[in-house]
Every structure is written in structure tokens, then in C-alpha cells.
Length: 363
Ligand SMILES: C[S@@+](CC[C@H](N)C(=O)[O-])C[C@H]1O[C@@H](n2cnc3c(N)ncnc32)[C@H](O)[C@@H]1O
Image (cartoon, rainbow, N blue to C red; front, side, top):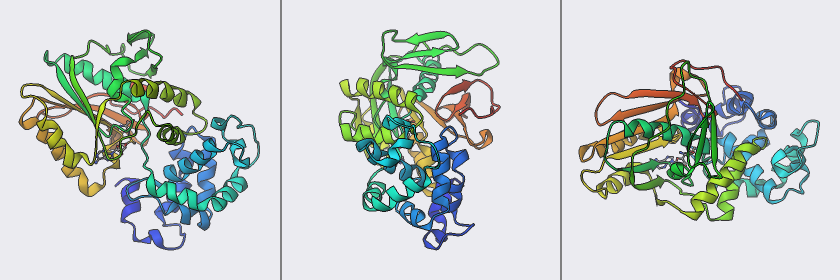
């Protein structure tokens, strides 16, 4: 059971703070959950110890991680107004020079701006569109190219702003080798941790069509939507933010076709629109874990259903129980055949490996 499942199922969500409260546990676990962000590691603990802040966090939409939503909502308000005292602890706000405990400034800000934070938490979703995951899509597409000569239709489920749907516009650096569009401003580099040489990231299949499905597609041309995506990135992670800006520019210049809604409902219709004889690649990353537990069977069935009329390549990059908290597995299933693990990687694709063994986390 994932943290989100535990949060949605626990009847104690509306009761007072207690050691058994999954929300308290979630925030208390911030040093691990936000490994790589000393600021969020600390702020999570501040929230875990303060019932007034926990009460704000309880407004997160069902199925959404309250810790990510609360911290992103505060971050969003600071990015819009970096003159706030609290912004001095945020490297993303141009400052990040403050020393000492950010807890008091954070608490005061949350209590003062409570209504705006709650409104954001009720409206927004955790939709971080991690550009580096395009590297695993590219790796998977290379394997697909080795299995079919036909042009394929690429469908991304949980496409957020659609940065992966433009994956073939980017340049890739892996273990000292490069692939893709050499002149691209979007340079995706990942560390190769495999035992052997890195995989080839080409050639790719011809892509006849590409389309995204998301509960809430983000319009890369809208500055406010881009700001929300920026707010979802941890404040210290300025390199990821810069990469995201570049990718969003590429997407905004050439927006992919995207449908709004639940993939369980939309996939059959979208797949029905693909010409007979065209293989379909359905890709999702960091999406299945956001599907409520009771909907996952239907989610899997909607994808498998595409194999009834088409040669289906199901590519997924999702958390896998055997890889611990930071490991994701890239898996490929063709039609009804058993899945094949192509690689494993850091959840944000900071590193990729061919081995099935989880590596110690890198921040
Ligand atoms: C954490 S984001 C990941 C975005 C992107 N796949 C990536 O790896 O960068 C998860 C995305 O999945 C979408 N999502 C979750 N459940 C969905 C569903 N049942 N149908 C369509 N989209 C869904 C969310 O709206 C969100 O944009």
C-alpha cells in the first residue's frame, strides 16, 4: 500500500495529531521523501509537529500527496512574491542566503496566507513533469524499434505538460556518448550505472502520431501553469528547473495533442482512433502510483485493451517494490506477453542502470 493509499484509507485523517496519524508520519518522513532538499526536509518536520499546519495540509485533494502539495503551494506564492521574508531561504527565489531555522518564518507565512494555500491545494495536482525521464522513454523506444519496422502511434498516459511527447526533439548525454538532436537547447544527461556499456538510445521508430492523456493537461504556453510546474520542483533544484523551462519552451512552440480526463475512460476512444495496422506504444511514468488503489486494475485493463486491435507496446517507468524508495523500473510488455525489465533508474532518471539491483540513492 502506498503512502497515498494509506492517507486516503485512514479514518484518523480528521482526528487530532497522533503518532499513528499517517499525515504526521508522512511529514516526519520528509528527510527521506525529500532527500536532496535540506529545506523541505526541515519544513516537513516543522509541519509534522504543528497541528495548525497539519490542518492546512489536510485540504489536499484526494489521491494527492499532501506534503508535495503544501510545499509546492507555498513555493508558488513565494515565486510570485519573492519579497516575502520566507523567500530568503529559497534558492529558487533568487536569495536562499538566509541561515538559521526557516521554521518560524514558514509557520508565520502559512498561517497568514492560509486561505490562498488551501485554495491552491484544493485546485492543483502534483504533476511534476520530469524532463530527464525522456531518457528512459527514448531507451524504450529504441527497443520498440528493434521489434517493429512499422511507424507507431505514441500515447502518453499522465502526460502533464507533454515534455516527453517531444522526447525526440532533445539531445541526450549518457556515459560520454550523445544521441538525438545535437543543436537542441534541451540537453538530457543521466549517469550510467550499469555494469556494461550504456544502451544505444537510437535508432527510433518512425512516429506516425503522438498524443497525451491527463486528468489535467498543463498548457505549456500559459505562464501561470508553468509557474505551478516550477513550484513543484524543489527549491534547491535549479538545474531541473532550467531544464524544465527549456523543454516547456520546445513544447509550447509545438504543443502535442492532449486529451483531458481519466485514462481509464479515455484510452479506448483514443486507441479506437488509431488506424488499423499501426502499432501503439503506450507510455506512462510516475503515473500509476497516483492512480487510487481501487482503480489500478481498471487502469491496467484499459492499457491492455489496446492490444485487442493493435500491436501493443506497453512501456512503463514506475516505482517498483523491489527497488526501495528511490528506484523505478523501465518495463516493456508486448501484447499479452510477460513484461520485460529493460532498465532501472532513479525516480527522476538522474541515473540509469541495466541491473535489477537497486543502487544506494543519490540525492
Ligand atoms: C507525477 S505526474 C508525472 C508526469 C509525467 N508522466 C512525468 O513523468 O513527468 C503524474 C501525472 O499523471 C496524471 N494522472 C494521474 N492519474 C491519471 C489518470 N487516471 N488518467 C490520466 N492522467 C492521470 C496526473 O494528472 C499527472 O499529470
